[in-house]
Image 1: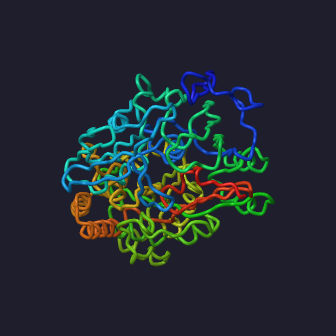
Image 2: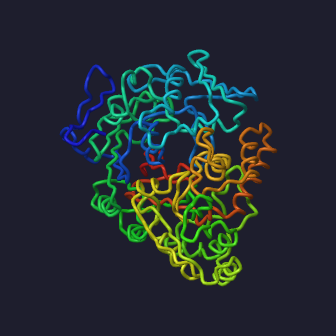
Image 3: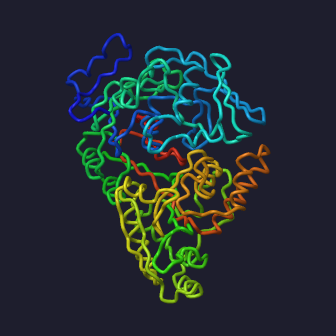
Length: 531
């Protein structure tokens, strides 16, 4: 994206000549609606540097432009992309065989040099507030064997590696020579192997793409795609109703019923792999009035969980969308516990347990939440505050923009006793979740990188460490389930619900929502014209 005051940039498919603007559109103008065009109203301003700022919304934009060695389908299953196959020596090396005959949007052949360059770049992007380096956990070297073979060397066996690097974009080494994140954001270097190529970037307003006819895979239905950035929920709904866009994401739940009843509009919904949870900060360094935090007591955490009306949140706050979560994961995830049920809603029992913990009159605390980052996050936060009040816990509720919120609850220095956030497992493997959320925080080892609860348990760490290195599939599954169960029993993360995915479009469009970690990643490739 360009800085304020700079003009938009047209990006030609052939660097020797400029691509023409759409007929009838001036430079920077919106594309007119045609049968082969798709205009999507999106919520977030993207970065076109696919290694900068790890967010689902950025991955969603960039999956149109770039390819990766591996990918996941709409159900979360791992599949080949720029790598056709991969094998492990069972010790410390994964070999990836690269797809032949693939070219970048500028005609440059895709080779192992691009893979080595891209993966080496991932942990070294300057000023990166949220790097993708966790996806290279355990990686020590990336080696070119020949033009179509790459070895990824690790510090021991890493069974999760092919899933770890799913959707980790490969850039053109040639196009990136002397280029920076700013060049990518302006579109000058945003050259990938994906199904769409960049035509124009217009600041924080819109991105125009056109179908890459040289794409190696299945060609998408739409010749041209325009992303219009509309952060306001109301603006997205209004744009759809007025015909300015064809598809919108993150439909406000309170608007979904109205849109569904509107002639010519259809609502598409499903469940994501994102689980909203109430985090309980058990860090012994947490400073609270009176000394020791009540959250240190397992009975207090049990009482808080019993106070949560999870079904009520789904029914009322989510307008019936979503589903109650039993753990920080969804069915189908490797390591998912089928025999676990969510704690029941029993406020009377919660008050008794709280009294047993030494708080018959409850206590005062604070709850911090994001506003506008997740579906119905602020409303969920207010509802939780009311549930806590019913059992005598007087929580001051504070909501804030996502950027402020995540700075506040930073791993290793979180001052919030209670916090509402979410986690999405895009890999379909509990090892990814357990490592990030339940393992003791270790910055150098890249373990526990989003463990904002301060939970630290030697046995949980042992189980997770073993699972991340275990070559035997059956034994590894056993370790994952044991670690998952132990973390759940600690009640430092109280699962609430799986977040729904709700989009709306013109009735002439079918959209495949899916049911995986990528369901929230709005994709033109999932939208199809009804013929």
